[in-house]
Length: 210
Image (cartoon, one colour):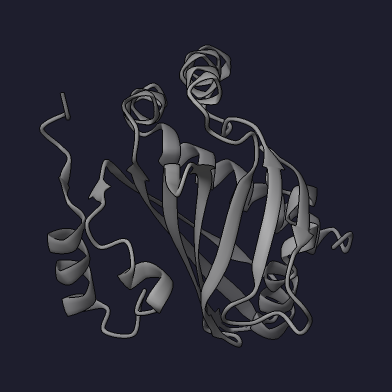
């Protein structure tokens, strides 16, 4: 049974587009309008670096494992340059939501594997506006669809030599085990996981290690 907080994907995205007319408008997102959003999560951080440097570092998806705690490898599966339509294949684990919650999420992920889900995720960039916005659709393949899928959007705003980043995600589990997996993150878990990873990104850039 779906939690009361689940809302139809089409209705939720139409509401979002009303307030963000330039967001999530790609064919990749349009193709999955019949999904259901289980959870929306977001976090912000201010990086004390110029917006062009911040955007360039974030847009290098193959370096995401340097600061995304749950990513171990990201490979580009399309040709350069990176932009709308670029696709990636990633090896990842549960997000940084705490040890007990991660363990519960993994139980349901393993059930997904046993039912035919792949052990990796794939992603496609759906918006690429230099120094302003990046969006992508990602998911764990299962048959001709997904076990779980997520739409991501990151915006960048220059502010007195620094850059404010806002990262948002819309989680859309496609299978019963995936719905239980997302629920296992607990209240606020995904928001905190985004915050953890953005803090790691901020530290990397401000330390000059990016």
